[in-house]
Amino acid sequence: MSKDYFLSSLIKCIRKLYDKKIIAYPTEAMFGLGCDPTSEKAVKRLLDLKKRSIKKGLILVASNYNQIKMYINESKLSAQQKKTMFFHWPGPYTFLVPANSLVPCWLTGQFDTIAVRISAHFSIIKLCNVFGKALVSTSANISNMSPCLTREDVLKDFGKDFPVLYGHIGNESHPSKIINIVNGKLIRYV
Image (cartoon, rainbow, N blue to C red):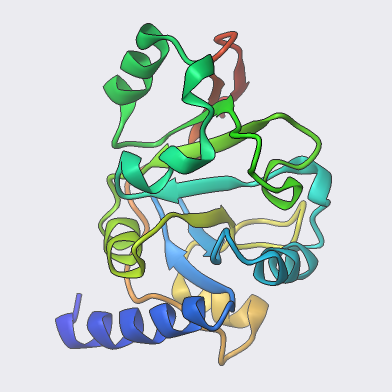
């Protein structure tokens, strides 16, 4: 990976995030689309772009727990549940956790939970660290279509000027597993 090209694309993506725009970036298994989770306008723009229902809720991805802590109602998590999450993080595990009552419905959808992941992927770590907070993370595709696996796929599907963080997807062959930490139910395992 060209360090200069990566840094240039990182700066461009961070500027877009601050401007409440959507970006694409490599994740563990595919390219993702992301935006600032505190911007209703950005999140709704992302949902429109994907043709995704707001009712489904979204995943937040972070480089560390402090970036997602404010979204979680920790009083509803046991020490064992937290231990389980931290055992799997950082990594390709997304947990549905009780949402803090202040988390907006554009993130939780029709649920009282929020999906969160602490990633081990270099690009996500850099993005979240430089941006200073978690990102909305969803696959880079129109709903029910195949996800983008390369930068070129993103540019083909979303336009040649779409902001894409330079880099490669990780070694996972499937999207992250999603586990409801409260009841232990496996929501997505592919």
